[in-house]
Length: 192
Ligand code: AR6
Image (cartoon, rainbow, N blue to C red; front, top):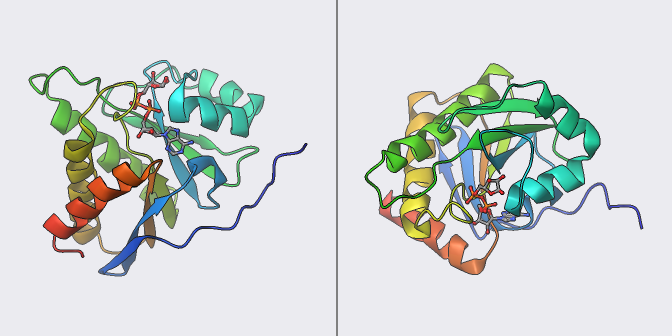
């Protein structure tokens, strides 16, 4: 059966307006989102893997992998952009989160750097809507509550620092538990 191209976007669980941007928490499969860019939780090779990376490559198709092969990998804490190919999203920003080692190897800063770099790439390309998965919180073992605080806090300061351009940032959670962590982070940042 052919994959459905455009799925209806679910209503956000929580939305908050910051400057001229809207920040949202949704529970969804990120491959179903029709946005300017979805962010991938990739590894340094950028050649695919399991988790959300596997799902994005399956949905994006072989041309997505083909473009990734031209990129020469990516450092931890950074990100590179490709087109979205068969995805509903127009682009994929492949970010490489840190593996959690207990917090003593600069993991917090590296995770924040993923979010900053992804937003910088989105701005550079004049993209208006970006959806993030909870980078590093699966196979890479980053504590999900801590990661959600860093994700929300970093996006919020970037949007406040550069209030124009990106109109919509979606925190795309894959479970209710993940959404709860992001909701707590919204609350702690004064957004809810
Ligand atoms: N949509 C949204 N979120 C998802 C989806 C999806 N379809 N699938 C999983 N998640 P992970 P990491 C959530 O393990 O920890 C890969 O092999 C998942 O529940 O995908 O950064 C790469 O190649 C979790 O909350 O990424 C790397 O080697 C979050 O996405 C490594 O895994 C991240 O989980 C990266 O590990």
